[in-house]
Length: 83
Image 1 (cartoon, one colour):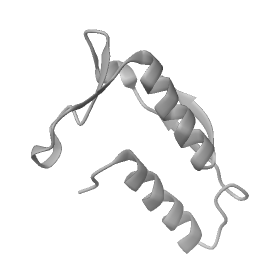
Image 2 (image 1 turned 90 degrees about the horizontal axis):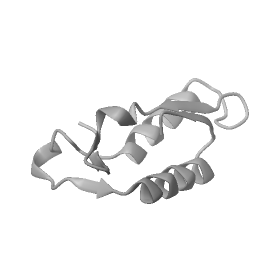
Image 3 (image 1 turned 60 degrees about the horizontal axis):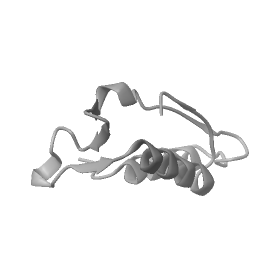
């Protein structure tokens, strides 16, 4: 089981490399977060299903934007829908 969003992205990038392609050159990523599914009472709630007993992480809208901007800077992401 994956424990973070970044772990999922790293797994996808590893699969791209394993297939003989270069992330950021041959492939870029597009994310559809469906944020409306984990938005409640003015907060974005990560791990809504409470993975492995970990506490929920909650973000304000500004924090959510900062989180997504950081991911887009770190990884070859060209599009984020419903962030």
